[in-house]
Length: 288
Length: 200
Image (tube, rainbow over all chains, first blue to last red; front, top):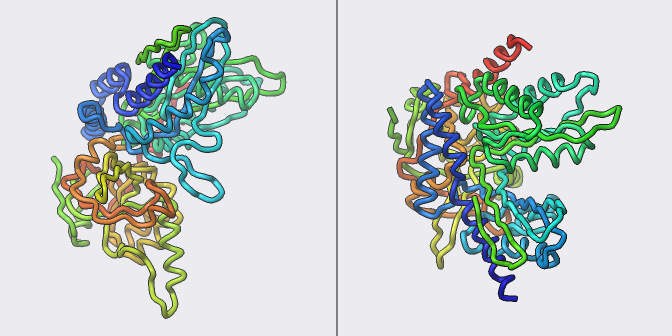
């Protein structure tokens, strides 16, 4: 399966690139944040982050020693000839990348505490979305443990509407952001069921920083929440400052009459994500 | 202005560090996170009798770095390819006992710790330094030598105890000092005041 081998290599390359090279929109976001900071400590944090991004890229070193839980967000075209090979290929790519980059072994049995590498029950995490067409689009995200611990599932009183949602998410983010390596990216999933709310929040993290929701009212919610989070003054690494979040990405699903679940997912400033497009030809393209 | 600290440090020097001071560090530290803290305390309990303390390393007087490094083995040599802080708050429940037993002059981590550690720092005249999270590549360049690694098989790479010699590792910000000041706490309190007063 020569063409298959081609796109398998692209998956490994995506993991390598994500691990060592910070996406250009995140670098730009950190630079903008630096311009907005006035205190010496906040500036020092952001300058060190930018310097680290440069050193990692130039030396081929992982950005962070926590190379993360490997997560794949897959938009799988139902007509793709590669669909059946994909699950195995994603797992193999993590195994190969763990040895070749190398990545830190970070998959641990929760009962025995045995560290097995980066492939184990449930890991890598694969999020499937079936779409029409022949193309498969895979986005790899390295999810650090500190930001994952800042996740939240909130149940807001349905009568309160979007104002209640905003207040609840704001209170949660301000409480957890200092431990999630801010400036963070905030994903918010509003409505649906509990698991769907969290899944929407996670999927929203994959967007580029400047990519707002297509619905103007959701986009306005994103901007309002971002402003409110940044007014908190938590700042880079929680040491005080103007920039606590680089972006807020929200999405929604219809809710049950009795229920308004809100999922919150945070990504640290080391917002590692790379996308691979696999057309029917199997000649894959790795894009930022 | 970065103050270059060379280990070992006296408690008098640590007492002169104030919240907001920026340091770099040269010398020997050990890494320990959740499982290592528990493992060290288990060894202390088991070694309370006549057998004495059974640890494969001596943590006495060494700074404790909350860190699970990324390392590569070339033959018998280890190279650190990622070094940076993990969230310190997870070590809150185990830290006071370990500080009392092994007299760490300071801790390094990120995100700050809780009231029990704050009290232990004041009592012992110790401090907490915040490293910049997510800067593992920069940190790796500051590692001069891997002196030893303990419990690698048992706990795995991130949770093992690594004893490392560093050269000018930093910037590190003093965020909890021996006088009881805690920058993390101050920032969170200020945020709560700001948001409490914010117009809705």
